[in-house]
Length: 73
Image (cartoon, rainbow, N blue to C red; front, side):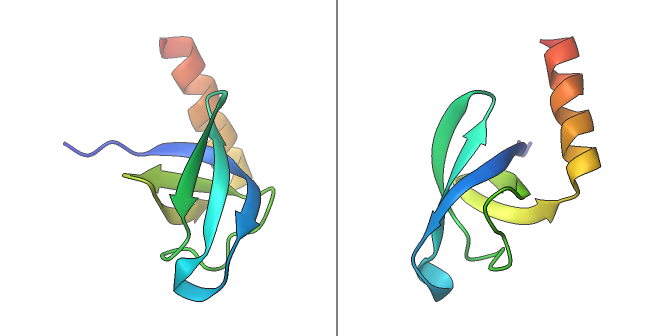
């Protein structure tokens, strides 16, 4: 079973395949790589799995996922 979470990009650093970001996920900040999402920018929502942003996520979908996770938790 795989688990991915959504978070908002707070900052980015680096260039190309070594680019990284600080992503806020549920109140915690995580360092993630942006190798699979080079288009991600500060303020974007991304889906994160195993320390890698794997997709830029539409804001309305990300906010729905976050709201659902608060309702369940």
